Length: 231
Image 1 (spheres, rainbow, N blue to C red):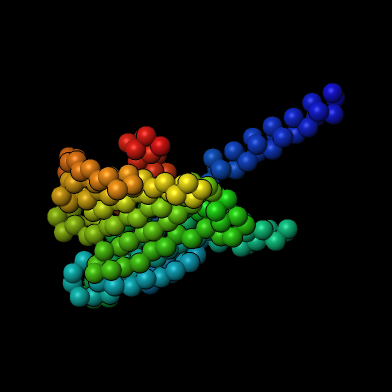
Image 2: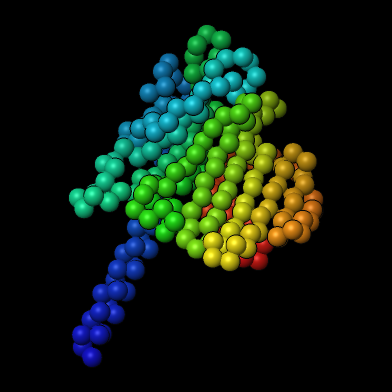
């Protein structure tokens, strides 16, 4: 009886420790990122590094701009050889005619961390895929175990506010055992939201409003989608 009680206590401590680690996930300190600089490296604060650099004209001025996927500058693996948990951030930098660089947006809660992929990725680092297509920044992520969640975010430069806004969000939940799929696609430019459950597709309209890159958090967006879809 004493042995079983001790095991329960140890398991409880382990779960609490795991929960605490997840709750204390690091977010980038935006105040350490300058508004302007003469080279990309100066936008990267201490303790972070560039995981991936993407280039493209993001604001329609025919100049190359940058989407930087930043990651915590920590060892990739711990002493046991398992991947460490490293947070990510998305930094957008625009280039002017005179070659000067300006910070145009920072998303500190959008990209999933390297250990946020769930059992689907196991001990392999979970990706946070970013690409540029026709001046649109696209972020694709997935995570889960039996239930796999896939999300896609699309951002575009808004000349009126001179900021990047969310123009599309796709959410899909797939049961890998039963094959059941539920998905939702929202166009924030038209205000149309489509929901698919198997072969059934329904449409609705939502109020059109501008959602800025800095205000998009993947956990909150997924949680809201799950509530709407009764998952």
